[in-house]
Amino acid sequence: MEAKESKNFLKPIYFVLNEAGEITYFSLRFFRLIFKRPFEFSEFVRQCYYIGNKSLPLVAVTALIMGLVITIQSRPTLVEFGAEAWLPKMVSVSLVREIVPVITALICAGKIGSGIGAELGSMKVTEQIDAMEVSGTNPFKFLVVTRVLGTTLMIPVLTVLADAISLYGAYLGTNIRGVVSWNLFWNQVFDVLVYADIIPSLLKTFFFGFAIGIVGCYKGYNSQKGTEGVGISANSSVVISSLLVFVLDLIAVQITDLLGFT
Image 1: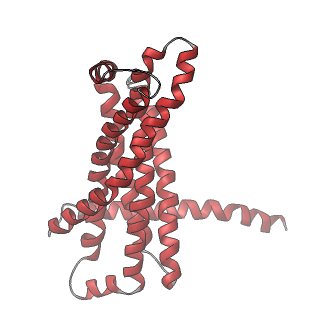
Image 2: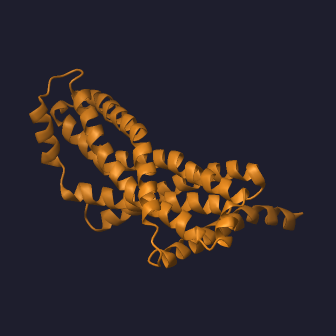
Image 3: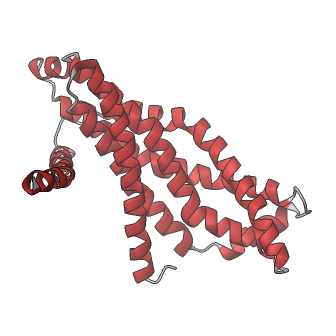
């Protein structure tokens, strides 16, 4: 009885370790093929357009709301301590350094990660990937490398746009119960923001994008169980990539703290 309970306890741990190993091997295969010819440049551009353009409206709306909400929620506390004038500075640092990069990555994990997992999963169960191998095309190069590179490049771009939109939302939130001129608001924002705030937050989004792309491609590329497996691939892509975003963010915060960027 105890042996059976021990086995049941170790089964989830074995599954997690095995999944981590498979994703790592999948990533190494990506790095082996990234510089090998032929370069699927047209497909890479198409994926960048799909990932960036199709995700921008959702990211923009979310960023605007984030800027408004964080500003409105922060005002009462600062008013209580007589520090209302610090509102633009505090909100801008919070948004740029942490909130916008993480929320943008989570949105993309839900939209892009699930889309990649479902798309490649459908191609896998309908044997389209096998047909590409028979025709002499490298499906991993065409399907996986282009999508991972697309997410790695476009998530930082979306984050930069989301930063700008969220700061505009903060400006609107600041003027809901007060009056702060356009020039004064942006002077306060850029007075407090330094490269040590912007560069680390931007660099970690490259890792967020890579994690979202590689997990979505791995789950879709190895989808099984017919059409049911497509749904499983899409769902697990979102769950794992979202978890990895938090883990990578924790690591990035620790590294920036050790390097003295905080």
